[in-house]
Length: 121
Image (cartoon, rainbow, N blue to C red):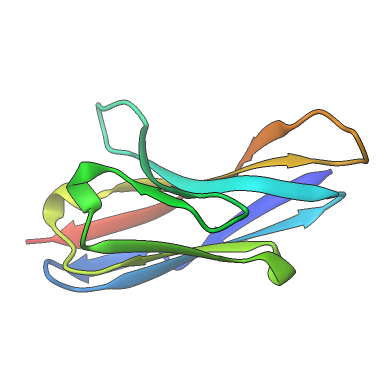
């Protein structure tokens, strides 16, 4: 079994910062891409940022220059540092990881339960 557990969400005023963490645990052989998505009420889930196992990053245009994704491969953990937060960043943030659970196994995508981020104006 594989689990992704997020932490670090909460309520913050506009202009503030939050740091999200997501730790993957369980029967993991190798983790490839990790990332963060978000879903606001009434909207589709959207990619916020992703990072490859080699450290290549990708960001949504709406968060470039404000958010930074990073990972600690030794801890199977991905982080999202969010600065200069805006009310439109309010959403449930989901962690995701593409990984294998055995040698030569199929790469599968797993999701965390989500953590609420609320930015007040």
